[in-house]
Image (cartoon, rainbow, N blue to C red):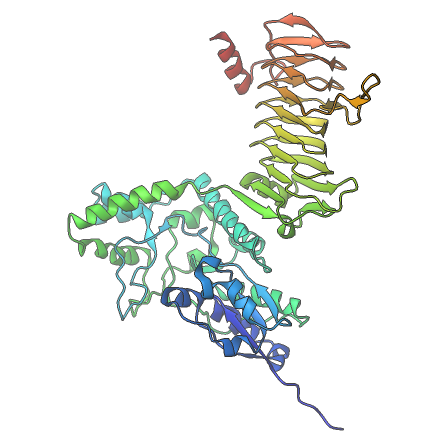
Length: 538
């Protein structure tokens, strides 16, 4: 029997320093090594900085391209340019820039870091926003270290918010990549050290990414981790307060850290002393100017965007989609809503209806904290927005060009909203009971027999002011407005405008009491009601 040796195919990685992490773990798979042979490309950031030409002789032979996305503004160094240079049968797999500030909320650009031949990225590539601010306030070294070593330096809410924010940033990156890592980090970051520094993952992350690649290639995943940590040459110390708040057992065990500029490992205090020496070497007023600019920049960027925008082909699995939606359709989700989806507190589904082959330009924005939202879309240019901290059960039916806006802090026990070439817009802090029907359009044509024309096909609108309560099984008909603070009684059908601060009941609804509003609590005024009562009295 003649054994024919399989020829190895070329694979390459176009990414940052995390290239070595992924490559080391892929090569632990014997099946992968037998099938693929590695050819190196320049690191993507080096290629961009130095405007290097990517060797086409490598790309033309590549059968597996693993890459991190780079923007098209970088031209021949962009990932799209690279992808267009590989053969048509080349397998392309993208993975995100894996970055995590969860252990280091203070991490920022170091304004006094100096690069040289011995330290190409500088001795202290990771800046500390707390130190920047304290030095600007005139604190001396002893006071700064005393502050940073306090176990209550950070507040618990801020630390947890920082973790949510950094995971959200990673989820944003994952909307453009095949591999996902944020959920793995969320589940494991408190029990296992997953990062040596914000941009330097441990080998556990490398194993996870490599196994996702192997699965996509139909190769059995590996169980072993590369024997030597790839990025252990610079371990950024973790604040004692972070370790205590997050109960990081691994941080308690690692009381000394490896750094490139010292032959000995440093504890937290000795690292901070070495870090502070940078500032004594920076002349005044140069250092003052640097600190002032850096502090201003830090505060301008501290409040990062707290939403992530998805195209329909990149939606997380927690969002159920049925039907065909074009690439210009978008779902924008708040940080709270993402967390609610992951925890199962929020259910979100999107369905195509009608005979249109594909839906174009549908825009959905969700700031809900919990509940169940079903959206049925039959035509292009529909728009739906759920405000911050809205919640409850919503059934939306959008025919033709329609828009629905649910205000912040609004709740619903069960509401059906039907829009056909119409809008339904609510204010904030509204309360909808169950069995509510918003009939903002007639849905079918009404014909004038004298002219033979349709007379009800104009764009229509239903609006509700702030702090409105719709009672059980009430109905709102087209072209009505319910004023701020009003209450619509059980079973009422609203066919005309209702003023603010009234109770309206019956069929059709009529005002039965004026100068009145409502509270969520049956015994006293809740916080929001107090605000509205106060505003009415002005």
